Image 1 (tube, chains in turn blue, purple):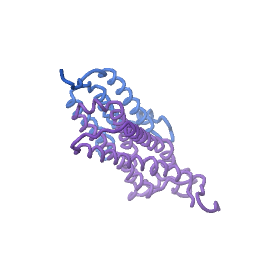
Image 2: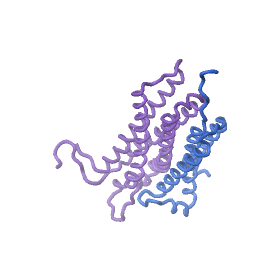
Image 3: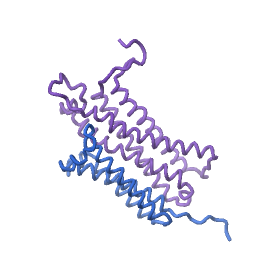
Image 4: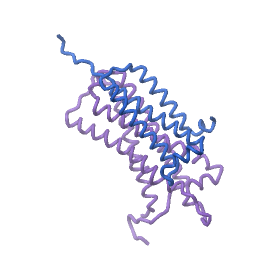
Length: 108
Length: 189
């Protein structure tokens, strides 16, 4: 019998990482949707003095937290393939960055 | 030594919350790089662990305070619309910047990007704080995760640096000003 510890499931960390990337991507999506559609822009206007930014960021935070709670529950005791999580998170982050960059939005 | 109420809140948003958040993120990234090249993983005393937890929680709190004060207090002053009777655009930074082609990009690129990308940083640092505080033992067993953690910390630092740089330069080009005058030192007259 060895004294090594059993490997702890990486699910809770994978859930935290992936949900943060989902949050950043959601901000990109809400930003471009608000920029391209007047109706969505008006919907996002949660607090008039600050405009659509308040709706975009509030929806982002809600989706980020919701994704985190759901994934954390699903993956509480799971061991997730980390390569897939890392690649997905990286792709979502890059897309999120692009979708918030004004020259990229204007070019679409 | 005087400043207006709007200048005071803008300074709190950018220089206090945002400035200390940027410094803390830089320190975190440096620590992660140092750990990467350490020959032996360092272990902290219980007191050290408490201080590290406090550092991470305060860093995340500074990030959220920076984005929320920016979004809900300073940004409305920045984007307020001048009335038809306005004598000038000094008190209306957004319209002042857009009124001239040489300054319009400060708003169209700088502010439009800054106001969104800034939110990446507190999201990333909140995730990092959770991982370091609640999942440290698991993190030690999965070295591959440390790279991902480092990338997120770097993203937070870059996002915060972009937001801080544009914020400072935009406020230099068209300062958020107005409201009651507060005298810090000297006579109020």
